[in-house]
Length: 293
Image (cartoon, rainbow, N blue to C red; front, side, top):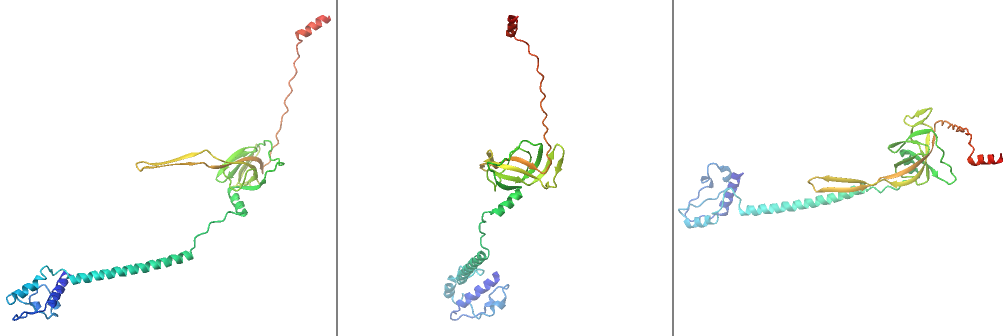
C-alpha cells in the first residue's frame, strides 16, 4: 500500500511540474526510480525531470515548494479529497440514520396499532365473586337476621376445615381467625365447603380430599388488622438500610354448626341429693323446754 501511494505521489509531482528548462536532456521517469518500484506503474507517464547541472536555479525553486514532501504520504489535494469523502460519508450516514429513525417510528406506530395497551380489568361481578369464594373454600348464604337462632349449645363433634391455604380444627361455638375474606361483610352467614375431616366420640370420617355432603356453618364477626410487624433490611458497607411495617388483614369467624356426621346425644346425669343430717337443738330451745316442764 505504501509503495502504491509513493508511486502515485511521484506521478502527480512530475505531471504537475512538467516545465523543461532550456538545454536540458529528457530522461524517462523509470530510469531514476529505485529498483524495487515497478516500472509498469510509471511507464504510462511521459514526463521528464530536470538535472541540477543545467538549471540549478529552476530546480532549486522547483524543489523548494515540495521540500517537506514524503513519498509515503498523500498530498494536500488527497487530504482535501479524503475530507470531502468523509464529509459525504457522514452526510450519507446521517441520512441513513434519519431514514432508519423514520422507519423505526413507523414500525413502532404499526406495532402500537397492532398491539394496543391492555385495558384495566373491570371489577369482579357477582358470578366472579362466587367462583373466587369457592376457590378459597366458603360460600356466602346471606345476612344474619335478629330472628335467626344460629348459636347452639356445645356438641361433642369436631371438624378440620381449609380456608385458603390454612387448616383449622373447629367445634361448635369456637372462634377462628383467618386471612381476610374479600367477598363477605360483617354479620354474613357462611358455609365452609372444604371439610377435610369429621370426628366424634364414636366415629371419624376422613375426606379424599374432601368429605362429601358435609358443611361447617359460620358467621363473620369482624374484619381487623393483625399486630404490626417490622421488616428491616441492611447491607453492610453499602449504606443500605430499609425499614418497613406490615399489618396483615384478618377475618374473625364464629362456628355455629357442623353437619355431615351423627351427633351423639349428651347424657346429663342428675346430681345425687345429699341426705339431711339431724340437727341438734339450740340453747334457746333447751331453755324453752325446761320452762315448760
